[in-house]
Image (cartoon, rainbow, N blue to C red; front, side):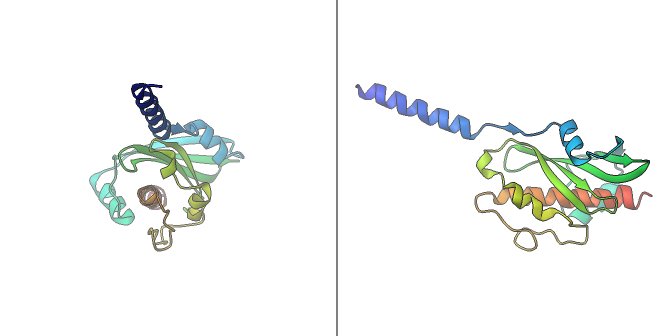
Length: 182
């Protein structure tokens, strides 16, 4: 076998391996995630908010995190006319590529669950589902700091930080738009 052929084969395998590792993954559509989040809901509606500068500043101060947009959509689930929960989708860059996840909140504003919808970084940078579960039952009063009350992830530090910021944003959005907006 010629050395050119061997070099070509090794190069092709390396390119294929890098391509596979860099593949983006979409796990759930918005509608699938909402159905999983609120299986007992009679109705799931949404409200779109255009934040004024005061609201944006307040949310950024509460979350200790920058807002990507002043346009926010919050989903509200109802059963028998009563609110059974809220959901917000947070889209942000982890390192250089986006991640999208849904934060599901109780009517009182505590995290009920977190579901990754899409992750476009290499999948080895995505924390496990068990890691995401540590946000369950957290509220705006939790410090939510990686290395503090949020465990870090070896090899996925940027993902852990980006997710933690996103959860803090969701809790701050709830506080400003839902809790204080009542």
